Length: 145
Image (cartoon, rainbow, N blue to C red; front, top):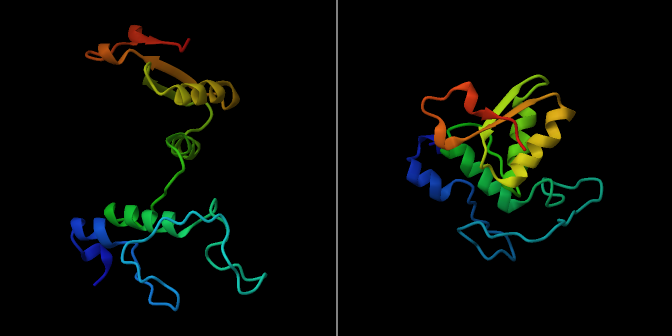
């Protein structure tokens, strides 16, 4: 039976978990948090799947598998910060000339990202007063200060 056939609850608990019955293993049922930055290689020219934590590590790999399973898709992505996730999403979806509308009380890092990208990528950015959205009308849109 494929993981996608399991219930949501089962996938939320078990996908990404692989018991290791290798010599020296502790036979963990739940994936441990790996803090190492580099991983051992049997041969220098064959690094294996895990090479360096910033590119991939077992902890994030398990998390991303679980995300994908819960969303019933092929891939899931994990990020070190919310701003890293935002930047990835914006790079993937926006193109020069697009108009971004956001709330005026966004996280400061998000506002800075918008300001930096506004000129650099020819985006139009408007931040709106989220307390005055119904009915939303153009006069409530104001340029970021």
